[in-house]
Amino acid sequence: MKSIVRFSVSLEKQLLQEFDRHTRLEKYPTRSKAVVDLIREKLVRKEWEHGTEVAGTITLVYDHHGSKLMETLTCIQHDFHHIILASQHIHLDHNNCLEVVVVRGVPGEVKRLSDLLRATKGVKFANLSMATTGKIL
Ligand code: NI
Image 1 (cartoon, rainbow, N blue to C red):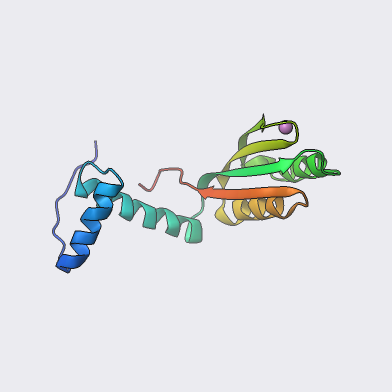
Image 2: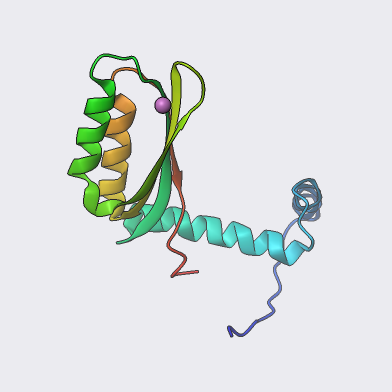
């Protein structure tokens, strides 16, 4: 089990009031949990800039009737098979599909995969959720 340390922080009263408002709005049980999450968010952001291994999901929405769209998306994903852990395809309605691709790998490669999928003609929405393997946290 990780040991817990306490530390104090000096900041302007107004800033702390704003932070406490944020803490309440976001339903944090304690100020500490809110601070810890901010620190972790910052570390994960740095991991995506300078780290060696990240994890995340790429969410896509597209109309599967698009000419060669499915084939293109599949070809791209095969080129990146080594960083794709899983994918799930959901038929939202007669036309629209939602696909979630779970990835783990070098940040630059994950971003490249996300960019290629997003740029594919017919993709209506693409979002890369930059998560973490959790190892540094
Ligand atoms: Ni579908």
